[in-house]
Image 1 (cartoon, rainbow, N blue to C red):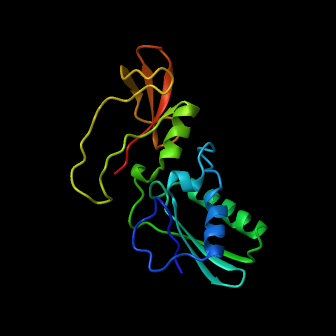
Image 2 (image 1 turned 120 degrees about the vertical axis):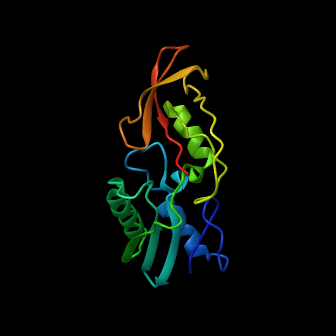
Length: 180
């Protein structure tokens, strides 16, 4: 059975069992290796979980972009967490369709990013593969809230972030780029 909770794609055939909910919580609580302030559930990369039998589980992860080097670490961390929770046979499958978008980041995840000093991506409101996305070019500074910010570099510490500077407080900050 595939379990899907809040923030997961629609189409759940059945209600998840108590064990599936528990295991999804365990897998979802694993921190993202590049942004440890977020869990995999808050980042929206945990797509599903299949209980295949006693002690056997398969987890579905969608990387933030194809070729993301962190997906191997995410997988190993999920396997370890589920084994520590009593699962003896854990496999992780990478799912590329539908692709991950920044709209998958939960409201709590966006709050945590801002609190950590990273400007969260703006909601695009679009579905993966959907039509045009309205673009608001203002990026709010996570420190002072000003929208008077400028782009310093399209890439920052990771490919999914850009480096910006606030003209009001003069502080540089990362901006988690929107991806639709």
